[in-house]
Length: 259
Length: 256
Image (cartoon, rainbow over all chains, first blue to last red):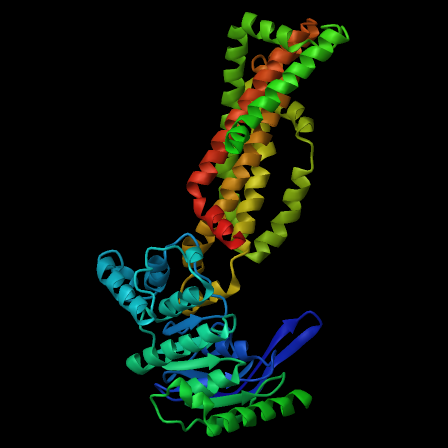
């Protein structure tokens, strides 16, 4: 699904060019749940922009779905640490926003609005927001806004979901709840996920593979396959094997931070 | 009870101000030619209600004409300036420079071009009031959250899509907020121009009354200006709340 082959990216900073990524190679299979972890400022978010085609690599090749990426890929849904809902739209209208942009929905948006609304309502049900469609974002708690943001990133049934620390601003309980929401949606719809996070437990619980990035300029220094059987329950987080994995990841990152 | 007082407070303060004014004038025997007492002003207003009303309407018309020009032009220029960083950077200093010219200095030029009358007043009102509209609209557009833009661009949204779906709605509270400032400025511009070169309008009326030493009428003109100004401000403020209520409500919930 996604292949980054020896990709480097430099951008113009205040004091000359900054090398964000250097010789990064990564491969994510179709339907795989990949997590990218690393020290802060290692270029994780840059990685996301590369994959979605928002920035072009300085050198190397990015391929998504078998095609080299030259512009915005159009098949990705994205969600960030901030829910970024539009305050002048109701929750439902926020979720419908991608359909107003992306084809083939765009041209038939008006005619099929009712059908799309029903689809959005169904998504709201799956994330536990039943009946909140006509509320405005500011009437929702942070966790609920993030759920709505997740719905927005999924409404056009993207083949690829890009998540940039989507749960970082939430409290621990809400975060674990949303892990399960994401797990269930992913298992049901089977899209490809790239989750950028600095929460190692989050990565270990959700992902099939975890890629560890080095400090800037970032590159992938280790890739681990997570073996826990699916479907995973939250109890898996308290198994010794889970703790071992998290500790190993933690040590790896501590090592690259020192280097 | 306290709520009632809160509603009445503006009226109480206004009346109180006039009462104090009256007492001072009467108590210290201030000459009417220096500072007329409110009762004298009121008498003058009643006596000259017809020219006052007629000239108020002229001022209202020139102000509104200038204001509407400023809104239309300001909105377009604001969208243009907010569209890209380059345009923003390039045009901003020019606009600052233009805005820092006192518009009184421009009136003689306008009179040379268009003659004495309503046109210079309308144009002065326009020139003085379009700037806040431009700046506010451009700021609203320029401060779109980058992540949100990424979300849309990753879907293949064009710049026009981003503007239509996010930029313009987002700039609307800024736009309607700027209207309150713009209408007040337009009013100042119109009156300034009328004072210098016009044959109608409140500014003209006051200049004439002043040169005839009719101080109560001058102050009656001031009073008419204040009432008109408050009225126009109230309309734009109401419009703002009406059109972009979401912006206020979302702030409210964030605060409490």
